[in-house]
Image (cartoon, rainbow, N blue to C red; front, top):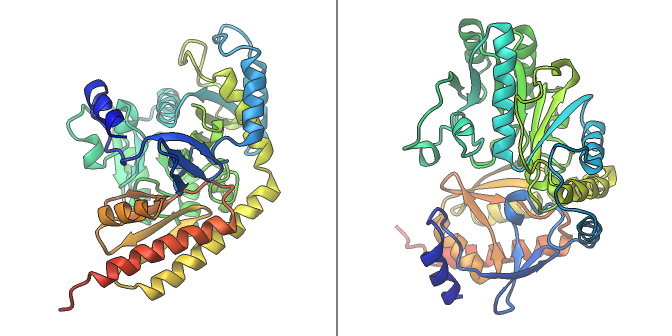
Length: 399
């Protein structure tokens, strides 16, 4: 492992704080390091590996496409992209799709689309929620006001209005005074600490958008593709957005993202207004179709069952270790736990238990396991977490 870490330090720009793990391969819900040690993966590539590692049906679909072609450019019609677009529309609402390679590119496409809408309607500006994360490219960064992410970088010359969560009166005043063209928000914040937007707030925002002719754009980069127990998280609410941005789990581990535009919002992009060389790659599109085929209604119902099992287990640990675990929240298999103990130490200690977890928003344990996780693996994780909490509790010094 040390030689690879040394080689990286000499080769790659230092932009990540990596875990001390050199991955050899993965299978199901597990990753293996270069010494053969097995680790339970509880954040699945930040929700990208929704179907785990090396899912046999995805591998088979990938091999089929590899034998056909990997790239043809957007000068030609791509059957896989067209069929995937049809599949996504059938799982959401009537409209059209623009494909990208990643979530931040999907946000960039949405910003440009909103700009075009605003230009025709005589409106400017986008509303975002405080603490949201929408990406690292400059346009998306304008909506991401997290200091550790956005500091030291230029801001695009386009109005962005921030509001707090659960503040409908503040939002209505903003809509009345500033007349923005759209609002972009996450139903469940990912990097912001797994904060779930309430039904009342989401319904209220949708109502205000209709009242003031503001485009409702949902960032479902992390919540989409079955993560919350519905295909898209907005389907938990009584709303239909105008635009949905998706990525992460969509490509079965391959780069794939994009935006879905409701049919009532069609017509603002013309040829030449936007584009991307690799969106979508035929391999990603083919595997994306297989992902959607696997994540059917029965699969989603099973995600909800596993979510309850995991939450119940966490709540028992919370009762047992109240000095270590705070609030638990989430939706489906997207769960956050406030930590009252040193998050870095927990991450290190649970790595010794051969479990991989992620910390976000400084002290939130973020769980994004593969959607294929089984009860036995949920129990394995809960046992490992309990072992770590026992170890931590034993080190507390009484007042």
